[in-house]
Image (cartoon, rainbow, N blue to C red; front, side, top):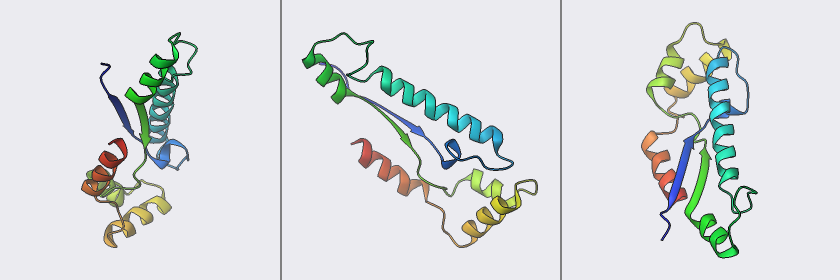
Length: 120
């Protein structure tokens, strides 16, 4: 039997929306999203690379899945650094500072549980 394959890419709004002073991070996230999207397409049962029978294609659909998962701004060391950064875009600095103080950031353990449910 074919093993189950689940690939989860931790994405970000920065992958699809440019933010001032975060160009390198945005480019990296965008590149990762595209890589994982292409990987999913390559392993799609409808890919022209796969000349398998109908049964094999259905099995592949069930066994290989790729997810670009964007949990929202999480309460991590990165958001701590952004909240305290003096060279970050003023609007972003205010957003991260306020979100941190008002406890509006997603807790990593909460989003990890949600991701496990999705991949289930």
